[in-house]
Structures are given as C-alpha cells and as structure tokens.
Length: 328
Image 1: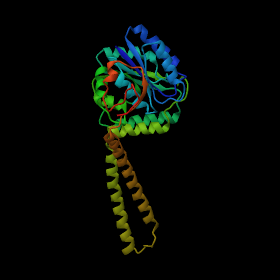
Image 2: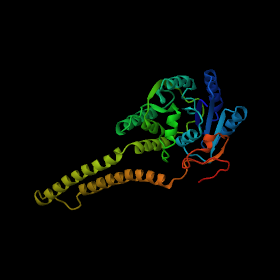
Image 3: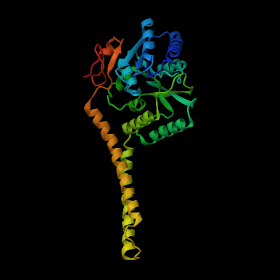
Image 4: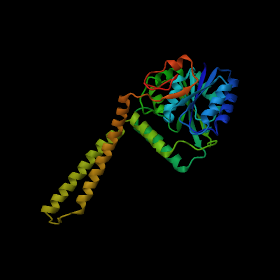
C-alpha cells in the first residue's frame, strides 16, 4: 500500500460524496495503491451509512466506527493505528482542505522529507473572532514550547511510515497530534494554500472543543503555565509584603488606621484569586497524569471492515479492534 488517507468524520453526510469523488479524481491519475480510512466519531446523521455504501462498492474504502464520540484527535489516532500505507495523508471531511493539494504534498515527501504540512495563507468563511483566537493560540504555543510547532497549520499533512510508527509509540490520552509530529523531528517542510469555506453542514469544532485542544497542546508540550504560577506567587508575595509594611506604617506612624479597612478585603480577594488560578493550573497537569496512569484504551471500535495485519498488530493501550466490540 503506497498511501493511506485518514478522514475523521462527525456529522459529515453533506460532504462525504463530494470528498470521495474529489479524492478519487486526484489519486487515480497518480498510479498509487491507496486506501481511504473513514473514522466515524459518533456521528448522529447518515455519515456511517454513506461510508458503508462506498465500502460495499469500492474495496479501497475502509471504515472505523467508534462506540461513541471520542474526539477528532483520537479519531486521527485510530486511523494512524490501522493505516497500511507507506505514507499517510490526514485530511478533514469538510473540504476546507483541498484534496487537490495531495499530489504536491506527496511529491515533496518523495524529495526526502518525512513530514509535509499544509500552511494556511488565508481562511475563508470563518468569523473574525475565530481567526483572531486561532492566530493568538498558535503564536502563544510557539512562544512557550521548547519545540518548533508551525503556526497557521492544522492536521492536514502527509507523513511517512517512519513518523507513523513513532506516533504509535506515544500513547498519551490527551492528544495534540501536530505537536507530537513536531516533537518527533525528522526533515519537515510545508506548502502554502488558501483554506476554503466549509462545503456543507456545520462544524463540530465548538469553542469549548477548541479551548480543550488548546489546553492539551499547552500542557502537553510546555511547563510555562507552572512556571507562570510560581512567578506570580513570588510577585503577589512581594505585593503582599508591601501592603503589610504600609498597613503597619498607617497603624503606628501616621495613625490613619481604621478598623475594617477596605484594602484588607481587596488584598484577601486578590491573594485568593491568584492561589485558585495556581491550583487550577496544577490541577490540569495532575488530571492529565491521572488519565495516563489509568491506561484506559483511547477508543473503542464498534465495527470496522479493516482486516489487514496492521489492524491486528496495533498497540494494546491505543484502542480496541473487533470482531466483538469490547474494552481491555
């Protein structure tokens, strides 16, 4: 198998037929042996039925049906676990990332690179707030991590089998795949493109999910929040000491002290707020440690038509493969 195309789907019935047609139109002229791996991440529409119909007509179409919604990054992980290709493309089903870019990505990979990612020049059909928050997040993450995570990129990219095998050795529960790929290293490059508007349907990436992904990226690849909590503790302690000196001065020198001084309440609230923020940051890291210690499977597969050896040789902590839907 030359190429595997991983496609996580969540309520994408409006886009699947067009995506399949465009992918086939791009890959057939390349003369490659390829497969499509659709991962149904708990869709509530007819997405799974559409994919199963495609699989019945085209043996190159594989599908993985989760027992519930596990999230976009876990869906991509499942596709990587079961992909048989010597190179793997990750692409979303909403057609914002153009399949027509795949030949250029593949050509770059043949030049000796292990990762070729697609970098966005522009983003059509997205609100100003989403563009601003995404821009700020990518630059914040780049500034506080000790690895080089490309800005203005998503998961749309092509990676070699060497990178896929390395990713399968990273079984942490809170996935941030683009950060993991950057952490792995090897020769990486990019191709720029203009991201189109969503073809149909509604995005499943709510602001809540975006915030969660951002937290996974920051806590997974940076200890800057912990350092910030420590530094803020020293700063607040210094301010508290100055307030204490001023309080003693007002009480014993200027005699302007009044019982129930309002600034006392302000100081208590300020100190309490900083302490709660610090505890919350520490709690985020502890929660992620706890999730990894439990070693639950990343996902549970309800049904799949993948039967090649890669499907039987996936790491035990990563997920679960039928014949029977189960967890271990």
